[in-house]
Length: 112
Image (cartoon, rainbow, N blue to C red; front, side):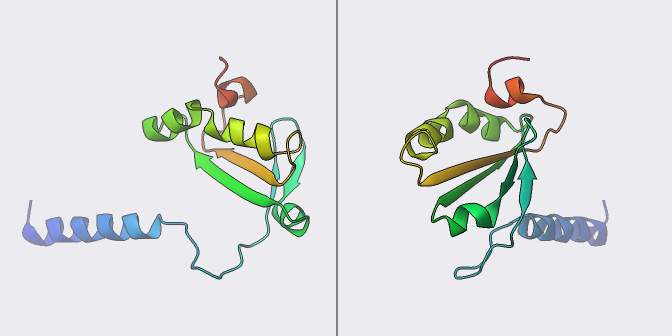
């Protein structure tokens, strides 16, 4: 491979890695968004924030071994059960699965 091509590819990979970071800067306001869950319920970010709740947003993909391994620990499920609507009601956990073809059972890790 020519040095110029190799350097171009290395630069593109470097830029791709930095642009993949979706973190907003400290003190910034996240834009409002609406999600529809597997059951047709809508969730509005600002509705939860305006109600004084903390919102935890998990974005993962089943085909990502690290993401799926963390999802399978059920830490967020336990967090939701303790602090969500059936617990202290001070937290909302929203989880986005990149793999849109999965159903709710796969998403929850209870089978196909």
